[in-house]
Image (cartoon, rainbow, N blue to C red; front, side, top):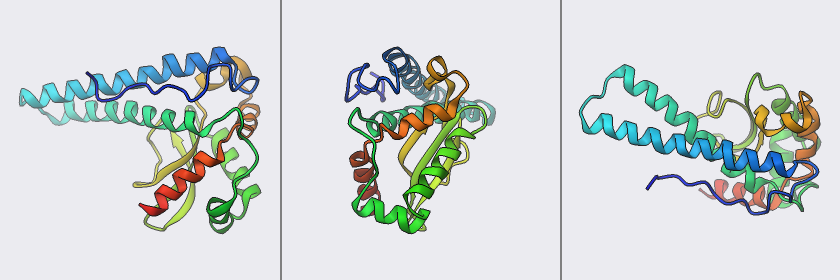
Length: 202
């Protein structure tokens, strides 16, 4: 049995329409996310096999480690993404998260603009991420390439926006900003606030 498993969505495939159509949500979850889960499990097995046979070489291990990081990070980010969204989402946060956004990111509107630009302008495939950076004990916005590049070491993702074409292209074509605008209407701020509280307390 593999180490990683595809999580169930906390809503059905039609719940996020019209912002995300049922067809796209099912394809994204059941095909793309599932592929990252399989890729992570398969690569772990390959690494174990190389280790068990005492055949670890710099070339072979580096390739496997990179493949594992890609697939595991894809699994982690998608698992957060599904929980960050809700058919009852939208609005803006309150409480400690809102205070932290005001303190670290210049207020909600400035934060919203920064995360929107980070998501819409990522080159190729990637993510816009609101994260907690534990060394500086502050919120930051990151622009993630693929699933794991350009990320501050140790930062904890709280809110993630998927900017890979498979997340939006069938519905929004090449107009990524329209898709990102719709994501804001789905954000489950209770989930983001709970992640923030857990990260701050860690």
